Image (cartoon, rainbow, N blue to C red; front, side, top):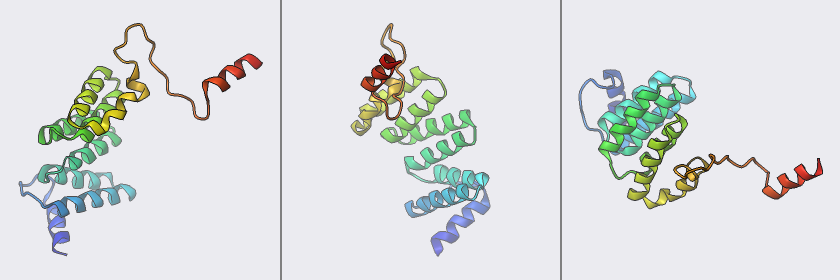
Length: 166
């Protein structure tokens, strides 16, 4: 109950009223409140929750959730800034770097995206599979058209057969 009161006090004080470090359980509770606010369609409340968690917490996940929410709200430059600050706070978060890379690829910034993805792999080998994503696979290879994602349920053999039958 005390944790809930503390979180609500932070929310009512405003996202950046003063710096008070919060505990991990409080940070996790803010994440839950943010998700709940999104489900209820209250994006401003979710933004407050994620902003407080990122500003007063210690987890890279708080910055990730804030950046993803800002992206969802169509605020790309703010999302990019949230990613940047998150990486400054935790340079060893491969998940945060990977998410930032995917964000940049969606924004059409492939060079930046590939750089971030390679950096993510250097700090966290578990994100290595992302380098095989279709969007990154042929980037930086000269004279290669960009790879397209495969269509669901299609194989090269079935595609060739369909073309031959027509």
